[in-house]
Amino acid sequence: MEVIRKEIEEIVNRETKAWDTQDVELLMTIFHPDMVWPWPRTSKSHDPMDWVLEIGKYDYDRWKRGWQELFDKYTLVHNMREIKKIEISKERDGAFAVVDIDTFWIDSNNNKSHWKGRVCKVYTKLKNGWKLIMHTGVLEY
Image 1: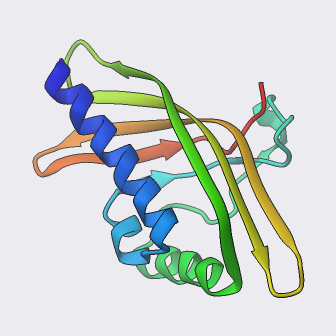
Image 2: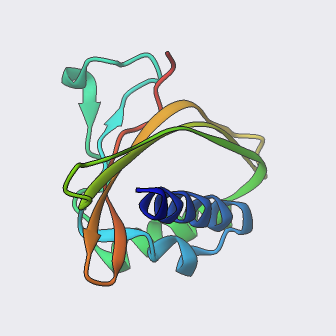
């Protein structure tokens, strides 16, 4: 299980590096082709009845374009992430990581986007490694 734990840590850290460096190509390496990413309307929207799907099911070109637009529009002020827990299925084919994040963006018009709270990143094991298949939006607890 320790090997799997390290593999999950690696993919979380790879995602963090992609945000830090605004490397859209690196970011795209973490996603499963069936990825879906629901977002709460606010960081206090714990009830999924209030969640939305902003970007739909993973589509390489659409998601890449969307993340590149974010990187082009915003400057990253800081991106702090801390893994709080990694859980691995007894079958060793599924896992999730609970990560506390504090990611702050600002654009040239002083518009701010602050992602602060806790997320759950769900991974599935494929023949070529782990991929992110589901991710909750940021919630404050």
